[in-house]
Image (cartoon, rainbow, N blue to C red; front, side, top):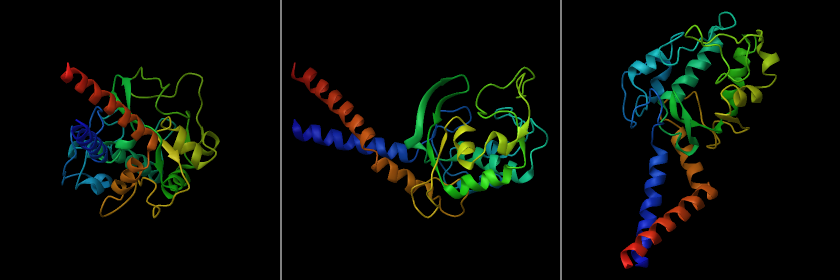
Amino acid sequence: MWIVLTLLLALSSGVLSLDKLNMCMDGTHHKVEPGPEGDLYSQCTPWRDNACCTANTSSAAHNDNSYLYNFNWNHCGVMSAKCKEHFIQDTCFYECSPHLGPWIQKVDQSWRRERILNVPLCNEDCHKWWEDCKNDYTCKTNWHVGWDWSSGTNKCPTGSKCRKWTDVYPTAKSMCEEIWSNSYIYTTYSKTSGRCMQLWFSGTNPNKKVAEYYINNAPRHQSFVMTALLSLTFAFFSVMMH
């Protein structure tokens, strides 16, 4: 019995880790499983070897007020081209990345069933994003909630006013953590550290090794999984013995 128990635990733990290392979120536009997508568009092409997005999604990610979420980047005047590039890349990362498993959380929202939370973002990506947007304007800190959607696209809510980016987000850390309600967490890790996720990359996706590191170094999560598996296994054997 103990041999079977050990094998079940090892197998189950391995499958869970493998799933988290290569999986897609349960979201509005995500594929069920990741796979090659050779026709990904422009800034989404780095994920073409293994993606959770389709070619149509990658193309729409580059459009203002696209069908993806009807989100208007230009809610406080026309967003600068350099700033918009980062939001397009952020959308590609969110829609296409197959290596976000360690940070995927269940949510009860009309437009998605899962989200990412506290993804460790590489320092260079966060600071460059903030630097390229610092002369732009916005009326909100958290872009996930609180918009006026009465026209079908997001507008600044009543009582808000457009302010310079650096007044809304005085630091790169505040922007990266607050703009998407803690989807990202600010880190001091560089892209060469293997400890942070990269929005911008070329060649082989470096984020797989980062996800693997966090899967293998999450003792609280592993402890919970092992406890749950033990409980299920003992329950199974109790039924079998009776």
